[in-house]
Image (tube, rainbow, N blue to C red; front, side, top):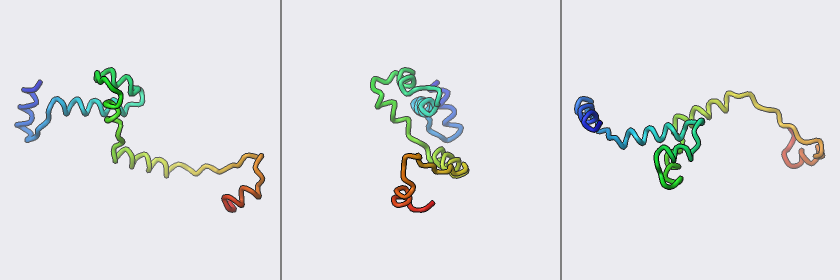
Length: 96
């Protein structure tokens, strides 16, 4: 596999390593909602969960997509419990 990567790097002018592929796979597994972090830890054979947790950082593109989704959703109406006095709610949060 190393030789395959060496030849591909020579043709493409890149410098990928087997560790790069492991890192990419680990990041994708850590972001997969169907896998728990402990399962990813087991697959990667990490001794400590903190090592596996490094792969859970949110990517900027993912974050921007989530924000766009959030702002496209309709606003939910705020409803206060009937146990609160409406005058108290208005005094703390202002008129709606």
